[in-house]
Length: 285
Image (cartoon, rainbow, N blue to C red; front, side):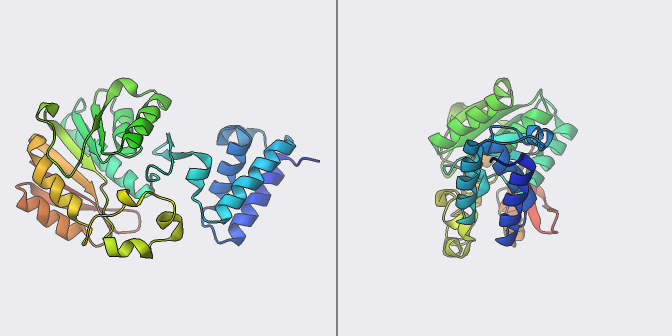
């Protein structure tokens, strides 16, 4: 006989905890909700109801994939970023809490400078940064740019999912090369580029190394190739008084700030994440 949703949830949570999954509670909710075709809010509402044999089968399949190491976001196909549901797939990185720090700083800057500013989200992936900005500042316009056509399509679907299509546009481009002349200028350029040193890729957790797109992680020999290229090629697209903001890897903030200064930007500063790591660097034109 099928179990109640509450029993399914507890069973999945306990299996994940036993496997050492830190966010077992959250992941169990996502797995059971997705398997039953519900949102997490609907699942919480329906915990006392009974599932079906088909729901139990789907839960079992998803749990097996998670226990084998596959990230839960790729299993469920969705992940939340600053309250916005984001479609994800193995073609894009999974949005992380670290990147919410960058989005928050970007929003705060535009609130101070220009709430209807023009923003470029370079190496956009899911589009999570630009879409979070557009959601918080409805008068702003974000250009979501990536070298991957798959990423552009996913970011487009995420804009539709969050009713933000009218606030964004899209650009298929290579961040390592100069922008199209017709692109124009921006009040803010934000980027979470690949920043893992090539040699360190194989030391990453298996859930990242074996499932997430390596091309979106590999930042070259020292992890700084994209920062150098973006500052060399894209700083000219900043309007007077505009900002450029990057997410950086642990221990990279000082070097990236130096690169920003060498590119002619000023007042380079870093912002810490919740663990006290310098996670975001910003400088101004």
